[in-house]
Length: 152
Image (tube, rainbow, N blue to C red):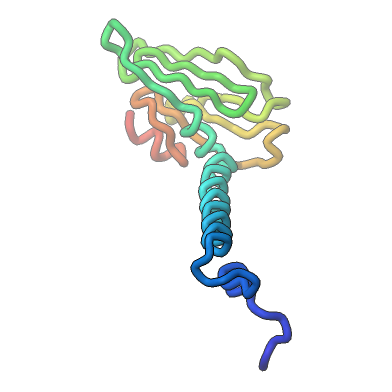
């Protein structure tokens, strides 16, 4: 079966109006290649942001403070900021600096059984049952409470 419409890629890369090897044809192919690359890169970063796990990992920054302890800050979406000081220490502390609760894009809860901070999507996120788990023992982010709780 033959199609009356020519395929798209040969049209983009073999423009009959430009001479092969001319500056216009090379430039056209270069611009199209750059645009395709940018679309690919932006789709990967958007995919990471579309999960709670991705949002937590992308907003995470850790550093060693002057006492030698590890401290991590998590800026998750627009509405949640969490700090864990003394990660792995017996006296580690969790501080919620900012949260709009259920009305925000993310909000925190704490799981007594596994000992992890649960980050849940709020009303602004537009999804449910997509959680991430932060361990105060390691500072790492996990997809399940079982993984997070196993590091006790």
